[in-house]
Amino acid sequence: MTSTQHPQDPTSALRHEAGASRGARIIGTGSDLPEEIRTNFDLARTLDTSDEWIRSRTGIGARRIAAKGDKTSDMARRASQRALEASGLTGRDLDMIVVATVTPDRPLPSTASLIHHQLGARTDCAAFDVAAACGGFCYGLTLARAQIESGLARYVLVIGVELLSRIVDWTDRGTCVLFGDGAGAVVVGPTDASSTGRVLATALGVDGSLTESLTIVAGGSEEPPSDEAIAAKRHLVRMNGQEVFKAAVRYLSEVSARSLTQCGLTPDQIDWVVPHQANQRILEAVGDRLGIPTSRMVLNLERYGNTSSASIPIALDEAVRGGVIKPGQHLLFCALGAGVAFGSAVVRW
Image (cartoon, rainbow, N blue to C red; front, side):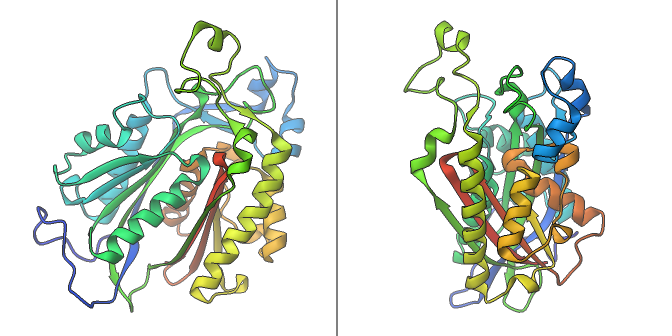
């Protein structure tokens, strides 16, 4: 993919004519995945589990694990550089960087600030993190769309990145078999009403009553890091699988329907669903509710597991570069994660 036009003055973030019909479109995609592959058979050597047990419940066969010393910002930077190259832009052209992650390099500064420096972005380019877990990419895309449509920004980099292998309990087969590491990124830029590739609709939501269903108890202000917390593994992911499953089926269906309604499309008009890669059973149930079979879903769950906020942009990048997604097709994104926070978007490619 290439950008239709470079900004004539990369030092200026505001280029919006009053009254113009301005939209936002994805103009470049990129992704980064660790080299190490940890299969279900590998996990079965140390856990009371098997390839059949994991596949039958999740659809996952393997996941990628970041190398020792590799950081969240490293994966995010590499994915971003590929997205920028695809868009024909550089870090100097960006007006905003949004990083969706729950596994930042550090509690502070933001991972976005680190990437801002690594990409050589201008000092008038905003950069911040969004902590909406698996729903984070949809949140970031919604922010990018709003900034561009309002004229407050021209080019926004949205990154979904997670290094989940360092926050899961590798002795808990209920959680560790699910997650993997990776990063995906998109560059979002302006378009007019007649152009293709436009983000047609976005929708977000949260059910805060389910905060305890997927959480990390220790490590924040409620329970600061301590030897006791680490010994009890309260600094690692805890999940009520049944609650998350029911919430995901309900809210992924509802938030997807909201986006479709906004842009006046029906499920039959969606060529591809690019969903958060959470669980095969969840995606099948959501597909049944929406009337969209899994044959029209872009899936990489079997190879990568659940990469949280990175899963949609990774799957999108692979499908675009592989020629699966073609110009003019309608795409539906949907995701749900801890919070529980959920979101969706409809894009005309």
